[in-house]
Amino acid sequence: MQIYGLGLRRFQHTEAELDIPTNYFDFVYSIYGIGWTIDLEGTFSKIAAYLKKDGIFIFSWHHTLNYCVGWSCSQRKDVIENGTLVFNKSYFDESYFRMPVDGSEIILCNRKISTYINALAQAGFVVEQMVEQTDKETMEAVIQC
Image 1: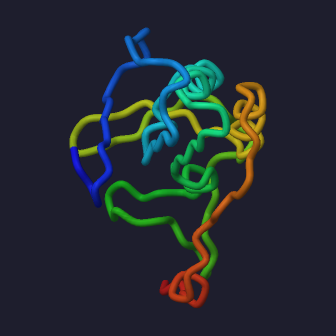
Image 2: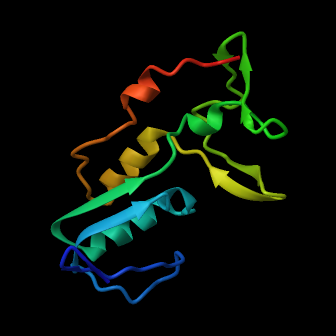
Image 3: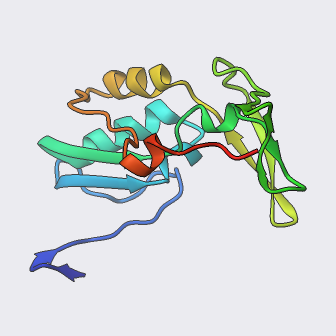
C-alpha cells in the first residue's frame, strides 16, 4: 500500500500468535480495535515488541464513560431525564456486558482509563499525550429533551 510515498503494511489479526517481525515498525495504529481485546496487557506487550526502539503506538477507543450512560434501544438514544444524562453502570465496573446490535448482540468490557494507562506502562510504554474530544461544537452542545 502506498500513501504519500510511504510503503505501508497492514495487518488484521486475531489475538493468536502471529508471524509479525519484532523491532520492525516505527508506528503502530489501532483505530477502534484495542477495546475488543480480552487480554489488554498481552496485546500491548505484543505491540511493544513489534515497535522499534522509540516507536510510536497510537490507538483510539470509546471514552470509558460512554458505556456508563443509559441507552434506550427502542428509541436509539441516550436516556435523559430532566435535562440530565442517566447513568446505569458504574465507571468502576469493568465486568463484561452484552449490548444489542442490529438484531444480534456483542460482548464488551468497559475499562477504566487507569486500566489502559497501567497496561500501557506494564508493557513499557510511556504516555506522551492523551487527547479527548474538545471541538467547539461538542463543547457548546445543548442537550434537547
